[in-house]
Structures are given as structure tokens and as C-alpha cells.
Length: 307
Image (cartoon, rainbow, N blue to C red; front, side, top):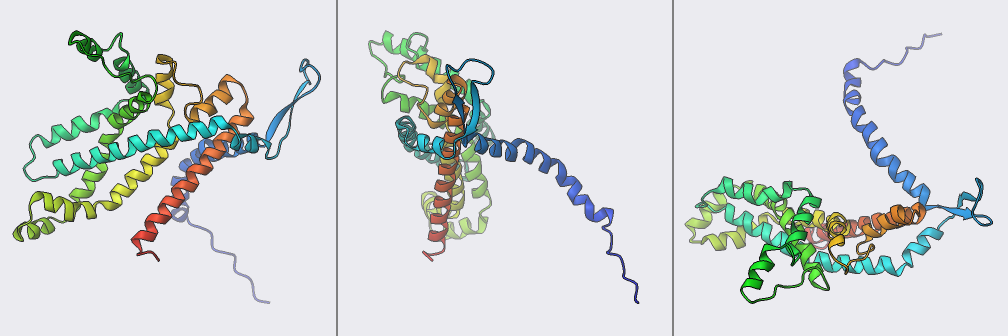
């Protein structure tokens, strides 16, 4: 009877990649996969209260099924906050990406001066944390402490009310535009620098101006970067939290459920209802995933000629 040969043992060189990946995998599981799984688990639970709710066993955690999701989807506050977020995004995303594209095109011109300083000055607001930026702009919006309102008052004019009504959308969008334009500009500018210089030289030989080069060569070539920045901006808009949460103490026109993420925070840490907050957060994550997938599907369909 022939002897069976044992399976070859993996050499240390073959196991080395798994050793390098192990820290990233552990961190991914601990700080990403497990919290998501625990949030889904909590969203399927609820507290059952017996009697007057007093005593050590009066409040017990029981299975709720999809009841929390039904309540979240039928909550008018969540729908209203989603509508406000859409209005906020409609103001923010076009202004931010338009400014980023304009700055990138201007910095990519051959006769630009102080290019390094300009790139640093435009990108620098992105390095400011969102809470700090919201506090800075929030005090600039307050008529009592704002130097802008002071100068307008001295000139006999009244400034716009940016902390009440529809002005609140402009105030919040301005904070995000100020902070996010620099990052998107760097992404688009990097894409512009990757375009072969021979295309520009051939266009100039044919008599094209810098404006024609920008419209007919640069814009089509950086279209993938514009799609990428729009995709990230859309996700960030759906998850807006720090700006309205920081501005809220400065105005009476903003509720604790102004944005969907603020409602999650209120349900979890103000009202103590972790189960409803978990269900709402899962709904927001699912909506973000569906919108992102639908957007990428539409972009890929258009890129492939509608196939």
C-alpha cells in the first residue's frame, strides 16, 4: 500500500501577508463590524415594563421584531428632518463643487501666480474641525457679537437673519462650503494635473483659447473626479450632524430633530431609547446605501452608453 504524502505546510513567507493584514482586520471587526451588528441587534429589541416600572425586574429587554423599524419609517419627525437635509444638500453640493471646480481650473492655468500659497489658503479651512468652524461662523451670525452686523448697523443697514427661518439653511450650507471646498478642489486639481500636456499643446496650436480648453478638454477629462466628489458630498450631506448640533444653542428655530442624525442622538442620549435610535440609524444607513448604489448604477449606465 502506497504511503500518502502529507499536505505541504505553508512557509512563513506565505503567511507573512496575513500577519500584516491581521491588525487591520482586528480593528475592522472591533470598531466597524461589531458596532454595526450590535446596532442591528438593539434595533430588534425593546424594553417591556411590568407594573409601575419599579423594582429590579420591572424593566426587561424583550424581542421586538420589526416594530422599531415600523415606528421609525412612520415617524413624521424623521421624514421632516430628511426633507430639511435634502434642501440643505441642494444648496450645499452645487455651491461647494462649483467653487472647487472653479478654483481647480484657475490654479491649473499656465500663468497662475502664487499657486502654492493659493492652494494652501483654499485647502486650509478643511483642516479646521467642523465643530470649531461651526462655532466661529455661529458667532459671526449672532448680531450681538458679529463684527459684520456691527459695521452694517453703523452704516444704517440691517443684516440678514441667518439663524432663523430659511436663512438657517444658508448659514449651515455656508459652513460646509467653507470647510469642504478645499478638499474637493485638491481632488479635481490632482485629476487635472494627470492630463497629458500634449493635449493642451495641440489645442493651442489649433487656436483654442484657455476657456475653450477648459470647457472642451479639462471638464470632460475630470468628469470621473466630479462624480467621486459628488458621491462623497452626497453621503456627507445625508449624515450632517456637527454643524446643526453646534449652531442649535444659538437659535430657537432649530429642533433636536433638525437632521436625521440629530434625531438619532436625541432618541439615544436625551430620551434614553437606544432601541428606537438603533432602528433609525439602520434606516438611515440603508437609505444612504440605496441612494449611493443607485447613483453609481446610473453613472455606470451612462458611461457605458445606456447598456
